[in-house]
Image (cartoon, rainbow, N blue to C red; front, side, top):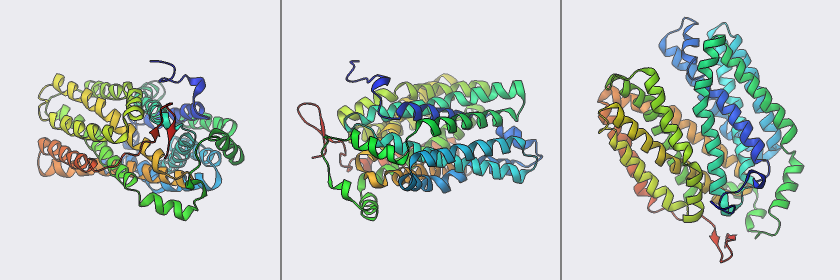
Length: 419
């Protein structure tokens, strides 16, 4: 790839690198708890249902405060919100590791989710504020590829730390990562004044639209009457219902119950799928920038629906591995596209709020996914889960055929234009 199509780190948008590094640490911290949290909760002598509540308390905290984080980022500035988010996350992680009652553990898990919501909504709004419109797909895909790396390596780190230092140790490791994140945030992210000056400098010479003169009320009205924005929320909801319900719940159960695969092999299976997704995130961004948002969304939705149907063909571990790789490939494009659409359509005055709403759709999907597939699985079979999930994706894919293109036009010199 040429230097024009693959920007070097030194040409990254302002604050991109420090934000991406801090985000990866915090995402890794969340996921180092994945392999040990059920066992740690069980050590309190609680039931399986109560263990599920402990696991879900984090998602509840995120769901309730995703939009709050975005709104606060718009009103009081990104650095303040990110710093508070890191500090709450670190304190809650320390508290979870020191908990000796279920009540304290639940409170700590809820606060971990609250802190994560504040940080992630604000940090994402900062990244999006400085993205060049003509390469937004590539930079956002790179940012989410870094994010997904934390998802992939976190469980491995957590398992090793717990084996060496005990079940409480991953909570303390998460607290340390949040503390480092707070230090980077306090010293490297901009104040409100610096952010505004940097934004004015970054966009100097570009076409100024009427969005620069919108009131918050008008900007919100325009945002929530925008068809592409509403559609991207639907795509995100269905994507994360599929991810949490299928990849994180149904596939491990199917692999163990039907194919007789062991836990370590199932872990490798899921990791390989994640690596396939991460490896294509940059290419997904390039295609979004070159071909537009609509074609990527349409094709990736139909392709993902077809891959989910292929789970009915996965009657051996090797076939299941192939399907998981294909799922990772097409969800790379499906994950990248909605975030770029948000950059296209969200007025800058309420972009933090828009990101909070988007993240709320993500967390709602993660909460609903396991419940939806559980109901279908209890009432029918694994095949029914695959068919229902593929059907939902296919319906959204058909709706995407009517989605307007949101990418900026490019003139003969390759410059992006909103006109």
